[in-house]
Image (cartoon, rainbow, N blue to C red):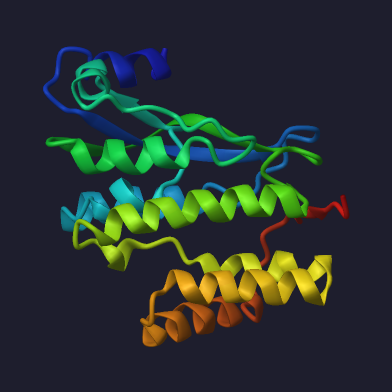
Length: 212
């Protein structure tokens, strides 16, 4: 009933996107995880400050969003054909083209964490797919003066370090080229990644690295 009421009240609204809160649990034990905290922080910030750009450009999945069909049709929005990260392009472009948005604290979606899922299982091919998807949205944001909401692609270096020095150096050079000489931005993003590595806040779940 809570779910139906939460979405039904927006059924005839003029909003292009409604961003909702989420909760998160492990799928096997139903133990609570903090995977959804980032979403809820963005929702809360939008409600308190009326700044919706983090919701528009920093949430990379379509979950916990109610999206108007007219927005999709009028702007020819689509999901990319990728083995992973196929929803990032849709999420960013829908956020960009949405004219009227709102945030709602109601938690209508549960993010589950499952061992071996596409989100947590990482190999070189999946890293390459995710990196290519991130490059594309960064180019999109840069072309519209929104580079401050860029995807920090330096985060992938942590995963590439598991696949040997040659792969790591190759992808490092590829990432450097992506910044197109904006070395201050590159150093800023790299520093942010290092700080996150040493942050004491525990996620409660880990990525599984595949060698293939």
